[in-house]
Length: 345
Image 1 (cartoon, rainbow, N blue to C red):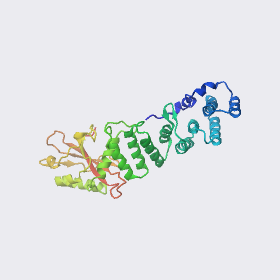
Image 2 (cartoon, rainbow, N blue to C red):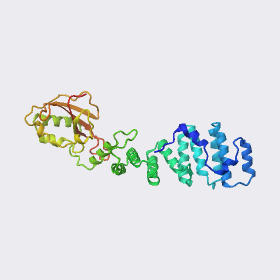
Image 3 (cartoon, one colour):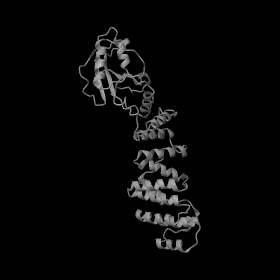
Image 4 (cartoon, one colour):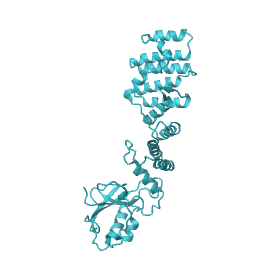
């Protein structure tokens, strides 16, 4: 997406539409001379545009953003039928951005969308520019949801749809609209570049979306109400060499077995296997306490003795707290999510 940055706002504002009428207005004219022309001459719309635009640019050249705001808001109020009002309000919004008044700028960007017909600025839709800025400065998830949806529906050829589906899903999450979030994550996963896209600030976008969708569609019957309950059950199964119990305790969605350097979503880390193949004939042991690097949401249990097809006999069982508000009876439970093979790095 093309996002307008603050350091180019002034440059953008100083530009005007490429209208032939602009050539008839000399930049050295004073504000009073321009105002006199505006009030005493019967001008065509493009000629009026040229006069107002020059007056605004004169103020911008001095970084008099308050003056620009006063000029343009008064003009729009007194001339509600001016065909260029969307452009005047756009300049007003950027002036407020230059004054670090983002909430007021948001109001004007949104007002353009609600009340003004679209115009092209340098072959770019003003409505498109407003939506781009709104998703950057808005602080309210419900507002961002509206803007993302409008961008996707109105300007699909001007945006990266894959990225916007992901960002829209995140806003649905923040707004606790979990059904909509899951539907949007599904749309994200259906995009051909979902597995490869690099989204700033979201390095694990595909993994998170895939896990949420798969987890939502699963039975979720392998979870435990607390970490101590999960830890006790796993240790008991190891003591009793009860591979069937361990197979039941393993997460049925995205359970991984990999080295510490691998990624959880690597294809070869998701292989399905039975604990029977590794417990039979071996003397398995475990640490009495969880690893000291465990946190309130993740825990590691060191085990060893797993010698079968590999010489690496140390496995760390990885326990994870479930974050899934869509299912309140499951949210906050714990699962055995995977195995890290080898000593911790």
